[in-house]
Image 1 (cartoon, rainbow over the protein chains, first blue to last red):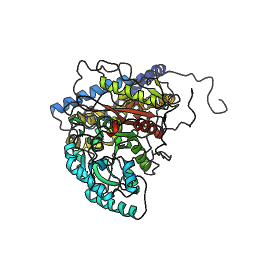
Image 2 (cartoon, chains in turn blue, orange):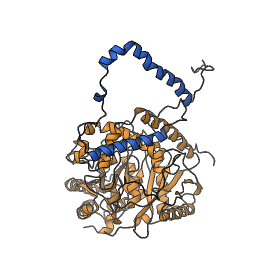
Image 3 (cartoon, each protein chain N blue to C red):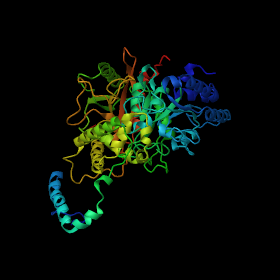
Image 4 (cartoon, helix red, strand yellow):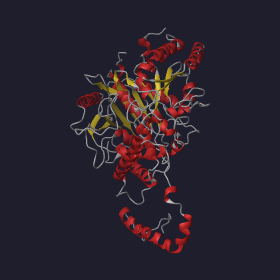
Length: 111
Length: 479
């Protein structure tokens, strides 16, 4: 570990695709493992699928409105698929606390 | 009684005449109130005319000014606000039927600041319901009905700050306050020939404004000149403890001394209009002429492009997810079905199902976009582009209708020219000012100047320089 507390040497940078491969294996295995020990319990505790509904699912929509919601959901899902990043660095954190930062005056390059 | 010529004056000009006691704030207020009552409905610009409040405030201003006390350039100037700002005791409808009887018992910070500056509230102005929420099918999507472009009443005024868009260039108010999440100040400014600024995110307190997106909402002035935008922004900007996202920076901008080359040595990154078959030739020609003007003012111009991202999709995902959280009760209690527009209803219901991972991914992309756009401002003082690629749509156009076969195909790899969406995602300031009119329909066209974060002053400086040698912003509609 360096003086400023960062790990050195052994930490391998991993791109998003590699990370997905690694974590994906665990994610696939996890349900199987949990099923072995908890099959009996889960049947009693897991709510029936019909009970889990998104907000608005019970609204009294006309057939036209239902169709419009369905097509909007499809359209939006298609659009969002376009921006799902495949090449973002693994360590790129979201702008959780959104504040704009003022660039110091005179920092412009290339004059 | 003041005449129409006086009502069309800029804030700067009105202020000079009020201070010189050539214009009475009470008479000026009466003049705007009468014009609001005469033309407000015709333009679909008004939610509520605040006659009683206005006359009390105008008399106070007149008394103070007569007594030698002046509060600054907005003292005695009548204004209107988009009907999403809370005003104590006056209806605040958010443009939506479920909130038609809503009355707050407090004032938004912007309202408080404008009252402190001596300005006179004459009207709450129309808006698209819930500021456009999760999409809408056309200009009619409002409790107040469609707002019309004052230069051609068959066309939309733009939205979602539709009322300010219609009211300001028609001289129904001295200036107005609009709000923008993803284009709601810049669109009506371009479509109706306003000068409107979207300030840096956090520059103006959002306290008391209807929230659509906590991380993207901005409030800003819509005026008859860029100089006026600066004067109004002076009054409403600043840190507010009631809005934790407000910037802890002072803002002050005053009209610069006149120079022959006010943009000498300044550098502009130019986003040229798309050259698709569907591009609007008149808008492109107006933009080219504006670039020539900027060159004559001394600026150095260089073509550039934005980093390639799906800005529109990122922006709509960001604010739709936040709007879904904010308006969840409206969906759960079924009142969402009282909205005017079917597209808006479906949009809200669908937004409830945006995956959290997708929302967070847009925030990760946002971090990248902010860094990359910030880099561009190491080279350029401002980025300039057409505010929108063409003029306002006709009022009967359905935004949700399938595109015509000849329309521009959706981008496959990302957009490089959508400065409105990119600037909103990154929280950057931008001002739109008129740069021409179409020949046949007499529809306004707008040019935008987008500056680095917190450099609202730079955006205004460029627009003011442009308007110092052009007169598009002085055109009056025939009403």
